[in-house]
Image (cartoon, rainbow, N blue to C red):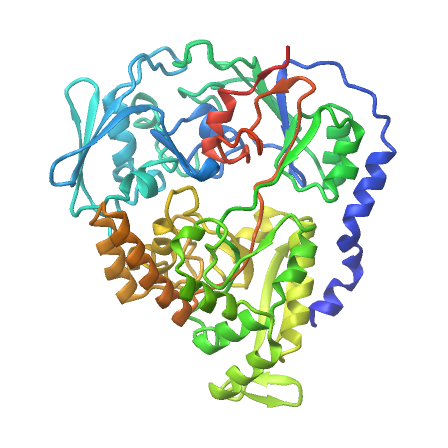
Length: 562
């Protein structure tokens, strides 16, 4: 069955923008009573299960509000670094030992002080259980030789090689510090639900929990003076995008990370003074991923032809014009200054919509046609099995367009539209089926993490394995790129790093590990009726998605409206 046939019954989702606007316009518009908690919602939520385990697909706000990072790195505002539970970082003269100072005055929610023993334990907890390995301590290519407490308030991390990018790509954001006195006694860290968490964050007390909502209360011992200024945060279920927009318009919800199609009409118009949105699209490109080790997608010419066959401008329509197209490298929106003009021209050409050029490329690589059906060099039809979450209306519509474009060059696409994230992620994170996915190495001030994620041998995940830890969804690695990345992290010279990045970009264009398509925004639709201080275009201090650990910065800045 082709995608066109399978999607026919749900084609109306492409018109969801108008539908949501109509639903919202029928709302009463009455202002809900002021509420003490900052209320957040998503869309297509399942009933909540009480899981605050930071190592096992936890509930929103577990990372950040409860368990804090050592350092926050964000791409917002052109790139910012915030010292967090680590108040100071210092490199040794040989650039192989990083010493961090654990912030004084921080206490766990059970009253015990945060110590350097807690931080050293967190960094090496993979020894206790692989599920707790946040820094790749047990993974191939690990560069951490040892981690030791030093004195009463410092931790030293010794690397096997110079890595000037270690803080941004390994230590920052990724590491959620956990209490040694709790987790050493957990027998099965990968499955423990941790129903009553002990954290250091601004909202580390579970005040109320139900399957439709939960409330995290303010930490009375929080280490930042006079913060947080909000009494609590509440996460509520939204069963659909329509439900989310109704909750927002009614004033019951303050912020959502859900895309609201036609947001100006569906939401902002109901209270322009207080209803706002901030959808910055300056991230690396959302890509079309498949298993590069699986024939025929292991053939570079096929990957390049797919890039040429897809009309990226049409996809931005499915994203309601909030997204922006990217080139074939995928970083021209996030780090434009890192792509030299000649390389940028080649990257733009490989991303140009040109089905005829795609067909010629395939014929030159040994593919043939049986009528309109593309045959691989072995003589078999080229097909693509794909997966998407039906409720993600933008990606659903994207797949409809992708299927049409690939059908035009002879590739039949079958799409499995699954009901929720849990049903989607097993096939998506292993790319057993083709899928749209994001890159994880995005909150950095340079593209090093992006290239490491997709080119470096240390990030490689074999076919059929879950790539969540490294982001190598496509199961690709390149020996030359691995060596270049080693040279990149061995220098602090930004000019040298730029030259190396240009060579990595040439390798990328030669191999095309996956097909970058568009830079999708971070979705933040918010109300200032009761709270102010949200990340915005005017105050772009952190990526505005509350599901990210770096949103802890926002939780210490958002405050009640006076």
